[in-house]
Length: 188
Image (cartoon, rainbow, N blue to C red):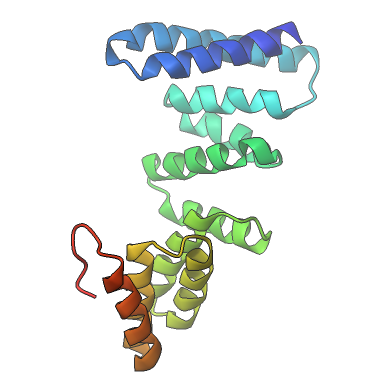
């Protein structure tokens, strides 16, 4: 418990220090120490708990994506850590040049019924890029139910309807998009 507690404390201190570029060495030292204490905690008692997600977060902050991914994956089981774990996993897949893995993660989140708007937005874009306009509309509709004032999603769903030749909803969505007064202006 002490290793786990201290490892978490060091992680959050390291994360705080990262905000100041002049403290990068101190942040890295805290993150390395965090990693060591959290690993030791798991060696003593191999029972992964929500506080151990900080180990994956420390690996991520240290740039160790391959090491971070399986730990962050386990962290998805904890609602309080889920959003952070997802963001870090997606970024790791990007750093590793594996965007298809990020889309697969978003699909899994959607299948599991987890409310995660960014997943719906990215899946909407992916579906549109692959010509599946119906799926794109479904994903952007889910996203807009959660974030109705998002200009980009309004524009994207209007575009999908337009490309389908379904002009009434395209115009309705474009009107809503234009009424949001986006900055910069979107050509709705």
